[in-house]
Length: 135
Image 1 (cartoon, rainbow, N blue to C red):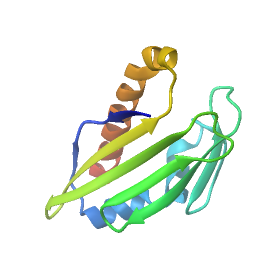
Image 2: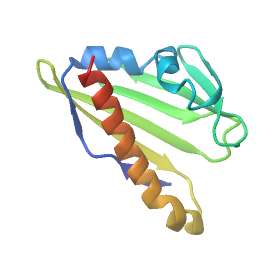
Image 3: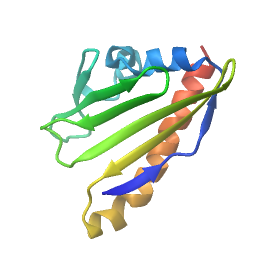
Image 4: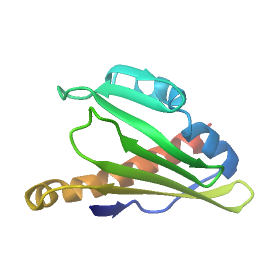
């Protein structure tokens, strides 16, 4: 497994508010409309198609209230991966967030997509922070 970590971003919300927003896939529905095909979500699972790929699914496997959300792909997902979203409230209305991804890639794929994964989780972290900071 190869580990990729996002940069740490600052969110001007309480960790509790960020946690509640990110720990329920139903909250993502407005953000993914038009970006993902066949989006379906309940509190713990989501499934979708993206750019011609077959169905993909993600499950929340563990929640540590206001601190950590752990996710993994379901049986439809072609590669094994784990995602941790870590939250730390450093002051009232100042929460820091980091996303860690562990993915099983062969050497060739790691060379081809490794930097894209890192860039992608940095972009995801920034997008989440921006979304929370504008509401």
